[in-house]
Length: 296
Image (cartoon, rainbow, N blue to C red; front, side, top):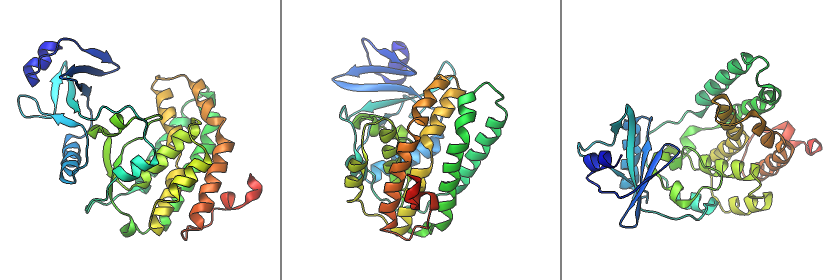
């Protein structure tokens, strides 16, 4: 690996460590990460160029000796990241709001088609599972119902009123500033993507409470259509589908889904509080099971 890094990047390293699929090393007190990348390179370069154009701080992608972003090693594509921001503080909603800058873009976002396609896939897969994954079969109908409710809200959105922002593919639990500024995790979307993602995973993990959330989002200015999109994203159970995927891929034990299942009542309370908050600020359509307080 040392010879590989020297040959392709002209960097002399004394030692390195491997964590998961990443190769980590340090030069002149700056951290570097050689990481596997299987995504679309053209999209990545477009996003990275946008970050530079709008002067959004992020880690640097290092080109190899061939002026290429990708370096192949043992039939695997790697990208080398120079981590300028070595900050282990955890992100909060303020960090997200200040980072996810508005950009001028003609890109059209189609969340409805994506969510419908994913739900169709999961519904087919769950029907083929047999008795192997009892907990997934037991819980799936509830979370697919949340997904369907989220999809139905998208019909009420005028996409011309949805602003395009720097955003992230995923916000992890206890994500650090350094992780947050990794360009490989950045995408183009609306700011509600990151805020909803942060709220969902941190609330499920017990890291934040309802009052913390309401206090922060009270200062966030969204258009009417963005408020509806925000509610749709809060309803969309990405945290469940992420764990579902990890179980199916053998990364975690099925028993871990119980952590999410146990939080369903508490999360419904959060959804109702946020629905009321959004209902007071937009013309979001009535969602009966959230509107009716007798359900809680």
